Amino acid sequence: MSSIEEWRDKIDAIDRKLVELLNERARYADEIGKIKEQLGMEAYSPKREKEVLDNIMKHNAGPLDDLAVRRLFERIIDESRKLERESMNARKRSR
Image 1 (cartoon, one colour):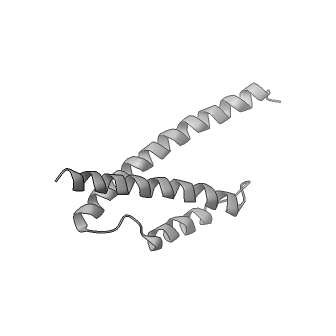
Image 2 (tube, helix red, strand yellow):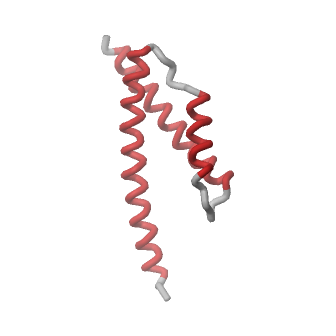
């Protein structure tokens, strides 16, 4: 049987990987913001956000329930949208 410290070490390793992946996702969102700005598109795309959430929900095998996963990804999407907007606005100001 594993000790609590071993389980905590496993969680800590996952947390480090999650931060790494979230930052990678943020870099991609920044690049999308650049492209959207060049194309004159808005940062907010309800259709795309629905697609992301629908895709994520297909992969939820638990133990988190669907509502918990949806809430977590809504926050992640909010931060991605914020990064896209900031990226778009920074380029507009630099012109």
